[in-house]
Amino acid sequence: MTEQQYKDLLIATAKMSEYEYKDEVIEALKVASVSFQKEWGFTYHLPNHRKEYIIISVVPDKLTVLRKYENFVDGLCRQVYEPNDDYEYWGLILKPGVLNNVSEEISQEILFDDIQNRIIDEIRQAKFLIWIAMAWFTNKKIFDELLKKRNDGLDVKIIIDNNMINKDKPSFVLEDYFEVYRVDVMSEKYKNIMHRKFCVIDLEVAMHGTFNWTTAANYNKEHWDVDHNRQTAKSFAEEFIKMRRDANCRY
View (cartoon, rainbow, N blue to C red):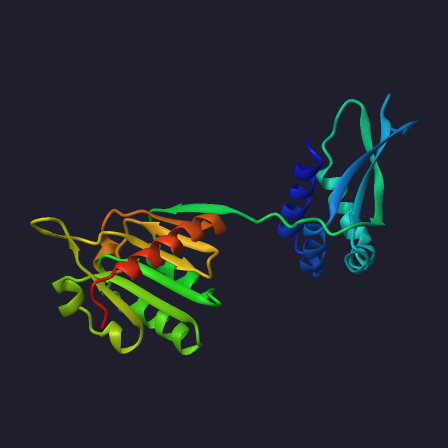
């Protein structure tokens, strides 16, 4: 196990615990550096095993936090330590250090069921902006959640296909509440469909897949990806900006 893997496992184990102050510990561990210190001295506990210490280095204010909850951190280190034939966990050393770069937590989930509720959950967690490109948007429940966010001051923008379903079927008029772009996609002879289905939240989360934001989509066989990945969100945001710039009709 590498030092980075050990640190990641410490954080993951802390997240699963029921310790009252785990969130403070996790935030300190995220900006800490972890290293292994192997000693020549035998433990005289396990046969032919030498001592190994876990060193956690962190900036002084976070060091104070870890020292405050040192027994909990020591327990995490002992729990995560990987048994081997040469060394035995022999203790935790906390020391001051420089700020470590915080690695982005990246996750991807692919959903096949209960997609509407997950979309609503992600919308509820938005803090700054929600940008949507959707072929068909008639779902009142999702509309209501977006309206709450707009009323909270968030930047909500919507691009939809300029078709009759989007005009006639909804019980609401998007343009009455949001910045909306209705898009016509034209080839040389025919009108085509703006068939994209994605949503960017806070430039950190990208949702995309086959699921249109309609009530009927709940009864179809659809899939939906939820990516907590800034790079993926950035790519979709750049495409959204390009689509908005090229939109031929805004109401």
